[in-house]
Image (cartoon, rainbow, N blue to C red; front, side, top):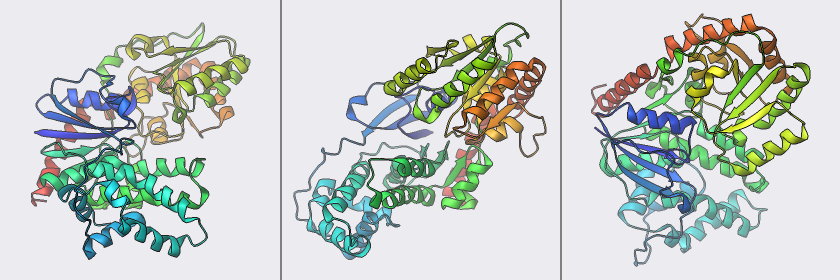
Length: 472
């Protein structure tokens, strides 16, 4: 089977998280060929891979969202029929366009985004929408907002499509559009797997963003909901990592009959042999993460400054790649301002080499799916303090048939005092720490093994093809 995996802003350009998951996923299926269709922000990223690609990756296609100036021109006068104009208008106003009609325009007819946006058709559509919905907004602001919104999307829709037996997108958004384009081009199914809920993440970013004019925040949010509906409607199956995420997908518009939960998995046996740390001496806390704003390392530092004032023998090890150098610099400056003495930034490490040195781990993210770092900590018998994002609460306390018990603490995000109290409790109570670590180890062994996850995805591919061929 030839599987085209579609990724946005992660593998193979950055390490950790979804990228690590994808790399291990491909390695675990040597019997299948993979095409990596990777979306990045800028052409300067092309070819700058952080992974040595597995031997069963037979092709890599790269699409740069800002590389929108390139493009073919048909050289013919533009003409659109009523069906095409209806689809184009629905696209511009972030409604529910007919994506097959749009693909016909920008793929089969070879219309370039620049041609369309320089046409009277585009200006007329904009003028109508502006009069109806933005009567008190400057047309120039509306024009440039819509243009900047649509250019990357139209560029994506003009992409050359690699051939595959099935397309597997690891998000909605632009990646979801590519998956639907693959379905259109080669008449094969696609599977959507979400690690986090892409649309909700973009919505939160836009609400906080300074670069979006207030008049157009709702429009930008509608734009990403439009992309998610294209992916949910076109996918043969939709998977999530945990039940709560699946319910959110249904709320956004996914058909419940298409939805499945396939939990993450880690290589349990790699971590299971790490011995427990005996109580006594300095308590060592590990934080395995990318140094990026979404991981909210600053809240962790504020919390640890409080821990350090209250507990004598404690040290924090922050380990992971510095994918955002500016944010990493801000974190170091904050550590200096807080006069933290017992914390260190380790950079990228081999987690297996260091997990045995930690008594427990901490994760202070403001958004997660089902974090691998927590599962790896559990497999090593280390409890974890997390924020209540993604399925972290379910990982810490268990859910459904899981009655194993508590494997750490889960606190509200962006609340350093609550995070500090939980960390202090694990520092002071070695017996509780060890018991929680053993519970986490049992949970990882029973529910989150990598081989089980791979088997579940292979079964999901089989179901995708049965559905596509009409036998379900």
